[in-house]
Image (tube, rainbow, N blue to C red; front, top):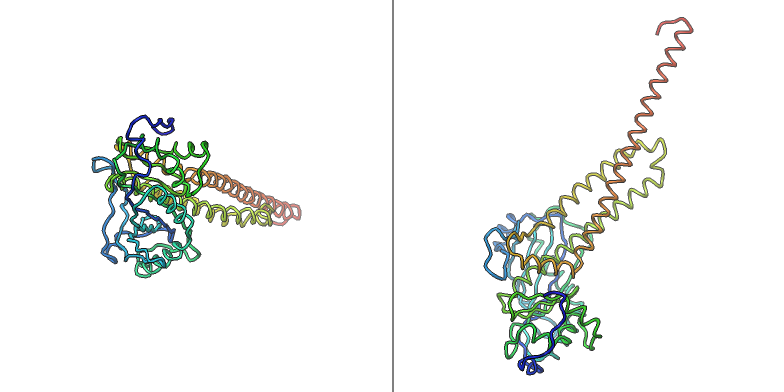
Length: 379
């Protein structure tokens, strides 16, 4: 259970795990927010790509699925300067996110895995390579992109260390008892031993479905011990959670800029009598942004449904909380509320100005009538 104390090494199997060889893969996840929307039906026709259906830990009803399943295709292998060859895959989400996953198999001991984690989580070359790949793909995908972003794309990366085999096939409890220190180092990308407090904090973010599987989720990396088929659920949900983080980061920046523009408008003179007539246009623009962001956030937030798969729902909640989705979502909600309050204020200011002008016009008409009345001339 997530957050419970780690069991001590009580079984003979746990005592024999030290130095056990590992086999698995390093997965590098890099995502870009490239446009407001991707028309997936158009994209399928352009690339002839396949639809990526949601994968679940156990058999689930058909209605547990993506609301709009992303489109995916296989990439040409990526060869690094070191000579390492990585298999690649790319996914396109309808809310404008492109997700790349590169995979490199590995085998060795725990020291090897710790060194790999430290090296790969600090490597900055992947962003440049991935950007080049995405730009090449999007040149062909241009007809499917709605309002592509012209400025530099927002980007998120994440690392998944998937161990599919450990000699002796230990249970999750035995694995944590014998190698909790190394697992914590892998999740943090550290070669040095961590403190007991930091180790406990990292290992609290763990979850298992069967006795012999384990996922430990961190903000920048995750450790997964499972079969390839079993690990697919966690990998897909980590992709989805990071794509949501990317979207909410975009909305946070968008709302920040929009609010700054409104504050500048009001500071320059948006509350003066004459300038209040311009608030109608500014308020209308702000309201349009509010509606757009509300629609887009709802689309990103509801892209996948867990109507009956409670384990996947709990796993997604853990992934989202660790990578920071709720924090950015709350920021966007707060700014949306602030923008809504500003919109109402600006509309009130405009209505007050309009009412004042109407009253002034009535007074002027009355004065003119009185002038003509006292002069004895009909109007």
